[in-house]
Length: 268
Image (tube, rainbow, N blue to C red; front, side):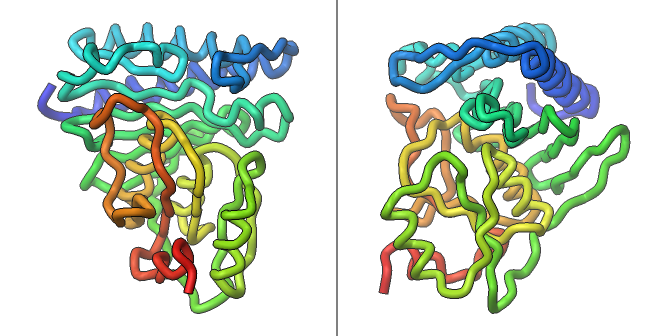
């Protein structure tokens, strides 16, 4: 598949919406919480969305493999040759889902030669979807209407900073203190990337592990809207399926790439 035609884009957006609807059915009916081998939570909503997305993508693009959080046992030897594949988090923010605060999402990204070239982040509670093709801008869809979204040029102060509801530690608190005057905005899941993409937030620092499916779709949306997601150690954008481990390192997501993020990450 050499291009992203409109039919493919719409097909994937529809799959994300269907997965969101499946998640909301579980959300309404009640659910049990189990623990995976790494002690992270999983619910019947994660599994239902996973099945729906994998089946839907396999129908749309049978030639492309799918790597989902719920099928991440695939060995490096099997996925190392992949030049193009789907990277999926069926329910990003399972902890937020369990807390019933509404801040969870469906993430679907197309990876080509290590780069997220198409991404969809769908918010099941509101039905809003953010979608983007690399180099073609980012859009927010509410109902049947698309609106182009852009990051904003960050003000001198205060910066609006996304703070994870479930992942805050002493290192992050120290980083936030180095940023000076800020306004903290609690937000869960990949919705943080989307809020930066549409200009309602400025920065999302993350010190600590995430997985590749947590960031790929949001990174695509953010970059297409004019922002950046940079590895804290190198300053380079994240690339995917480049190593055996599927864990990301520390990163910072910015609406305005000119912000002095290195000062915040490493301190004065």
